[in-house]
Length: 450
Image (tube, rainbow, N blue to C red; front, top):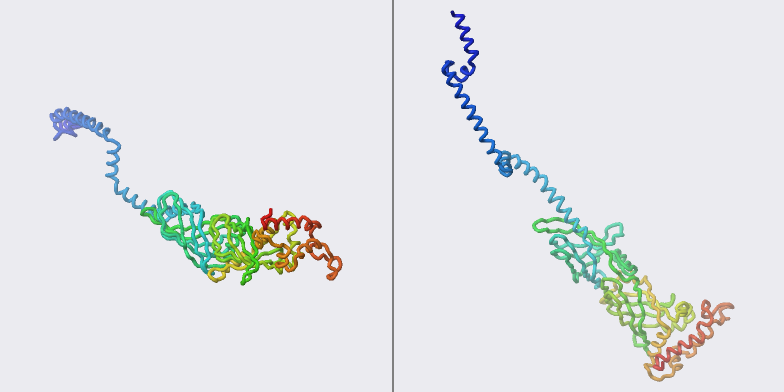
């Protein structure tokens, strides 16, 4: 019976797994009672799941994002700190300076006006008109700009100018007015001023360090700019407009005065003080004139001059002079060249200007009829005078010019056979009756008879 009981018990446990799990003590009635109860729990659980599913589906993306951020905010904070630690130094040390430098590099800085005025051998008064154009409003602290020749291998500035504090917003005109500066390298200034005289356009190079403010942001940059500025172009158009002989000469030897044109093809006004020029006929120096307080704004500039015409040199070298004038006389002109002699401001010689002008030569051509008319009118002033007597007073011999013109092809036996006295290289007939006619015409013009 005992073994049978065990078998029945075994059979009972095996066939009643639900009772063994949910029953209180494994009793049959409890197993029967709990079976329906378990089904009720499962149904309730299923209903619960079914009720929660639509709640999760109702969350918006914004709510999901907020829930995500609440869970992982500290990860994002760490990432932000790392990002800022890397990005901010790059922003302030690399990106902003690069933007500022690009803005500076893109500046054209055209020179539209200004002046270079010599005031002593060591000082200049400089004015510059230029412009800056920025895409963003910016403020610039005072900047010292060094002017130099970019073709010189070694950086050698010759003057320094100062940009005042500036506020730039879009295209803004910049005016630097009346800055007195020291010449820091006279050799380089001579080189630059020589280019100003010789070339249609001269290169003006500037360099300086600038501090830029873009709102609350500050950055350092540098300016290194070369611009082309219209210049003197060898004083093309230089001409003696009027010339008058003073007879008798003044006590200081002055016997000539008149006006001449000094053209300035550039954008800068040039002030060079009292300018003395040698008058040249070929290689012969025939006079010295002075132009006072020379200040040359852009354009043509008619200036008064006076000085001395060396009449004795003219008469003693008439043959040489006429030979040098052969090409000009073929066109009915007289050519008088000019070279620099001295440049003086307040009694002091301006060396850097003399070093340039004293080695340059400019030509002026004057129609023969105009020249003779001006010279004759110098003496007659419209009055009736005896021209032979006038020539005799001025030149010491009234027949000297006619003799020179009529006997230019004669042979000077005292100096050796075959040697021309006056004009060996000029075609015969050039100074015959046609030249005398020009002379007479000039006399008539001077006396008001033509």
